[in-house]
Length: 413
Figure 1 (cartoon, rainbow, N blue to C red):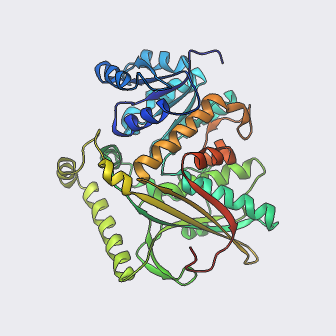
Figure 2: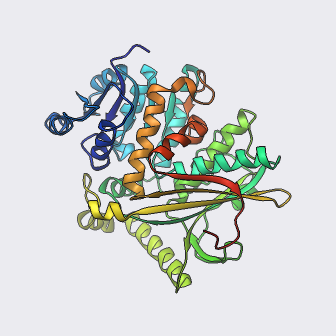
C-alpha cells in the first residue's frame, strides 16, 4: 500500500498513549508515523517533546465522533494502533474506518463483549480483504495467548502430540491506570457484564455442548494445587484472557491447525511464601467485592471519584518496580507435559503493555507480508493467530523473557 504513514498511534495523549509515543520515537526501526487524537493542543505539545528523537512523529487531529476525519486518518496509514478507551465508547468508529480502508489495526482492549460485536460486524469483510483487526495486544492478552500458542506448537513438534489442557499461573506487581478502570466501569454501565461470563464468547461459533461449557467456566475461590505445590486463586484478567485463547484455538482448528480436541484452558494467580493460603483467599474476596461494587451504579460513581481517573496512572517509581511472570503448563492426552514462561521487569499494565502494542503495530505496518497466513489471512484475529512466532524476537529485544521446553518440577525457578 502506498500510504503517507506506516503507522498511526491513536489516543496518543492518554497515559499509555504517551508512553507508547515515546517508545516509538526512540525505536531503532525507522518509520513514517503520526500521533493522532482529538485534542490538537495536546498533540502538538507531544510532538514538540519528541521533536529531537530519531523517529519524530507528525500530528493528525481526528475526533472519534468525526467519522470523516477518522476515515481520512485510516486511509493515510498501513496500520493503526489505539490506546483510546473505553473502546465500547470510543472504538467503533476507528475500527469501522480501518475495515473500510483495509488498514491493519491493533489495540489494548480487554472489553470482550465489545470485541464480540466487532466479530459479528466485521470479521467476514476483514477476512475477505485480508485486513488484520487484532484486539487484546497488551498484558491482556499476549502473555496468555502467545504463550499458549508457543506451548501447543512445541508439544506438537517435540512430543508429537496434541494438547488437551493448558493452565496459566500469574505472579505480578504493578498498578492500574485510569483508562483500565474506566473500561471496567463502562462494561457494567453498558450492561455487558453478564454476557462477558460466557466462556466461549469470542469463538467463531459460541455454541458449545453443555459439558464443555461446564468444564470451562471461570474458577471461583482459592485452592491448593498439588502439581504446582502452591496456593492459587482466580486471576483477575482470566475472564478476558481465557476467551481470547479459546478463540485462537477455535480459529486454528478451522485452518486445520487444531490445538487439541477437546482443548481446555484456565488461568490462576499463584501465591508463595508465608500465609499464601490466606493471601489467595483475601485476593479472591477483594476481587469479588470490587466487581460487585462496579456493578452497582451508586458504588460505581463513588469508585470513579476516588480511584485513578482516565489519563493518569502509576508513578515512574511504581512502574519501575512492577513485574510479571506467566508460567504455562500444558498436558497431552497421554499425560506428558511441557512448560512455557513469559516474564518482564516493569509494570505489566503499562510498561509491558505499551511494548507489546507497539511491536504488534510495527509488525502490521512494516512486516505484514511475513506474518502467518500472509497475504490472505484477515479478520478479527487474536495476537497468536495474527502474529504467531514472528512476535517472539521482537518481544525478546524489548526486554521480555520467553522460554518453552519440558515441564519443570514444582517449585523450580
